[in-house]
Image 1 (cartoon, rainbow, N blue to C red):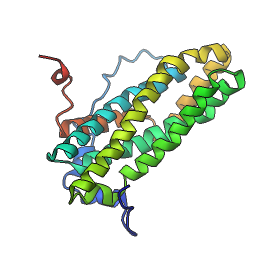
Image 2: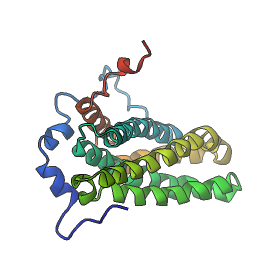
Image 3: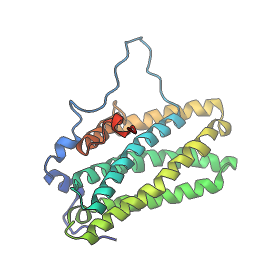
Image 4: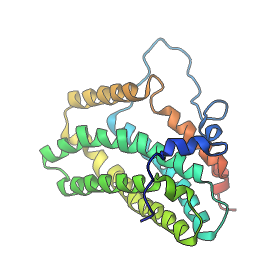
Length: 237
């Protein structure tokens, strides 16, 4: 474990002093935005609860790619951008751990347990939420990200991120393939619609009218910083 943050240091203060960090996270002019549809006079369709969670999992996959790139750079002694690690971890903390996982723990997991469905899986998922938050706290440690004056420190940060990646990929895959497809089986049609509205209300209360869309733009800016934004670059040649 890399040493903890000393008193008075904050990750946001650190971000403010990183060269270009503000520009990296600004969404104006370079964020991904949906093309507005023609006004039909109808209220926009609200995604179902499973769709909402799967959307977040898709964004999380992009964030894990950013972690993977940083792990590769740290382990290979290549140029490393600490603001990308901090920016990625901030999105994970704000959107995934403080919001997305809370939706699961408050609204979904108890319903699965009450119905006697996937109880063992739910317990593992809950324990992994706790473990993930602990790892994110370690990643957001200012000293850990900034003080990379030795191979040991670089390897330590890389190891924490690698642990996070190794746990979260199968965690989300299991939720998407084994848990969320069963949601309609354990709730009534009325309850499903109530969950849809509740998820939408929660998202707008937390993040405003834009909802969580802004985090997609933030992730895209971080991807551009390290050359991961162009989807075509992942195509085998």
